[in-house]
Length: 558
Image 1 (spheres, rainbow, N blue to C red):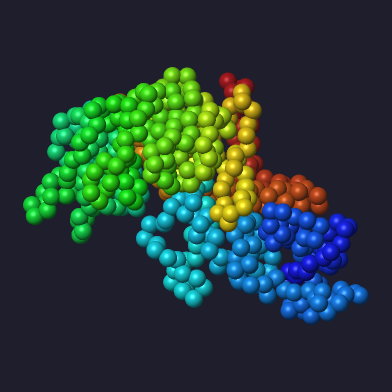
Image 2: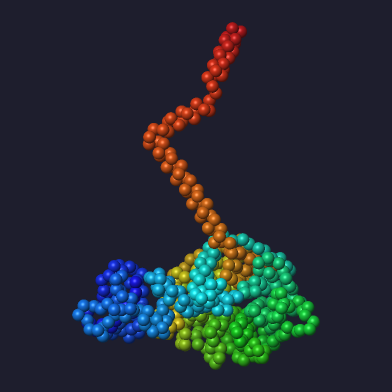
């Protein structure tokens, strides 16, 4: 089957040519999307439409409509220029591109190899670890971007399954900061005991401990090249990654020939939040400022002044979002100009903040126990943005938030961890540019969404939480670090479903046999045969009866 295109100059509404394929709902949706992509944002009466050929029609468009001129000849969709086909497919989201791949083997090959899958993956989860450039159909030893996307989307469902808990002991006082470096399978923690601990994510063992930094550690961030920690003494302690080191960073200071650690000074108050991107370091402090540092030259580039203590920040694509007091801000990192202000985002201080990979979704958690989701537009200056969704999963202050599509995880002073799935609140939105941005389904101002899962029973005051592909890490006042491991959740669910199917099948077989025997009268015969087999033979029965009679007679004579 091939999709055909031709220009029509008719005043009547566009209709598809009658064919056996006209009743297929997925195909009708695909054709409308492609038609909109060809016609562009301004659609007129002379817009383009798609025609579906019958099975007997030529793939190359030799068939023409009745009473049509040779110039009005049908053309195959695949005969369009490659750039136009790519532009059409680029207008589709992940679900629609998957529908296109199901139409025919030819479109399956085109849609599966389309570069849009790379964009879908990276916009949601970033570049996958250990995969530089997944190859196309010519490389059988590597997976395509579509396969990576489908697998990761499927794995994201594991957070609703079963899990195991690892409890890591080592800190002597409360844990204030945790960070999960998924690419290196490492966990970094710090707290009131003024040391940084590095843990193996898979084994749950402590692999290294830093020297005491002399202050409370309140924030930690890291990537594959740099580890940064900040605390109450207003400095940033940094470690560079060492080539060949089994755990990337030598936080214990055992390297004699190299000096990978250094400090950055500039803040005048405790450092409360940290973040990294490819070229900059971001730090927020109670001195009511956010500082932007150059990673290569270790110099402060920008100082973003606030009107209250800075509690959290999150940089994305040339902007950095921050919370100070009860307000939230979005700044342009290059110019230092304020782009978006969200006044009174919470009742009380807005303690926590996180963002999606694209930066278009912003989540804030506050002293009131609520979590708000805001939609932040690109290239626009907006004030007083209203929340698109609200959750109130906690009875205490929300101290920390983390986001890994589609899950928002929060930790609170009430000792609970909440998991929120935002997929149901998102809807696909087509922009005029090829790049796709997600839009939210705006809820009523007083509407409160329900969290999908709550993790209970962990004392009080959970200060920090982080989420990875299949793990959640949390630390709090108890001085221990807890890891919820969901890596086997899907496999366990499959085994449980298989056992349930086997039990159901056996039950149906027994019921069917019971009905069959009861219908032909064989059930009573089977019961009588079973009764005869279970009772003793006739001779023994007679003996028993005679003995009973003799005993009874003897008693009577006595």
